[in-house]
Image (cartoon, rainbow, N blue to C red; front, side, top):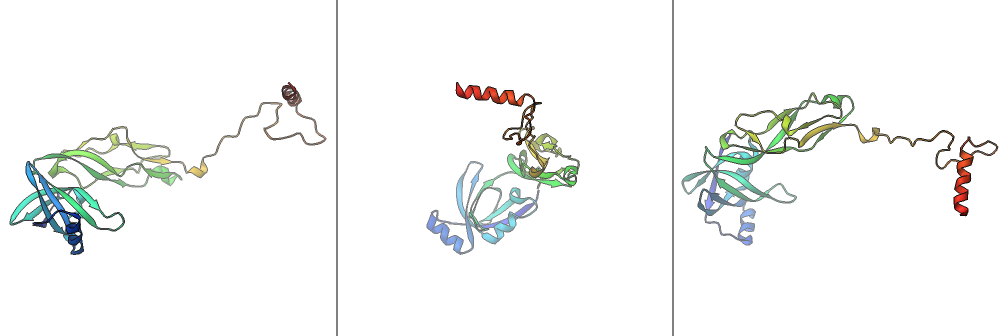
Length: 228
């Protein structure tokens, strides 16, 4: 697990007005908590935070916060992003220890091209991450899933994910991760069956031709019902 360092300044005043001012100055308001300690309001540099959360470990990176000359090992657990701009608005840092077991989500990377896709099928990912439990130092940056052998109308489930040392999958083993399906345009509806001697619905006997045997009787019965 990759570890990165991040400077954090104390003395942040809570509140919307203070937070807006910090963001204008290129900082992100944050809070540090955990391990039975009082929550600490801090601020971190926006660019440094972006770099810390964009290593191979992603949001599961171990982040050592440098606070007033002390070092605090943390992970970013709650990350608030701007709804339509690529910027962070607030972060919760959870204090951890290197021997601690936590629950988190890791991304799934699909490797290879399915056989079914080469045969004209469509690759349909059902989920892009999976919830796991692991010691913080054994959390993988991602789970690599080989999908090259998946044929048309086949699926892979959580139970098909590879075993990773120290990692326990917490999702339903039967939950579908991906599938290869027939393109919607190629799915044809079956034509309605027509009994022998009957005309397809909506069709009439051309003028000058006789109705198939059985059709005339069926029409007569229908007329009788209407008169009744």
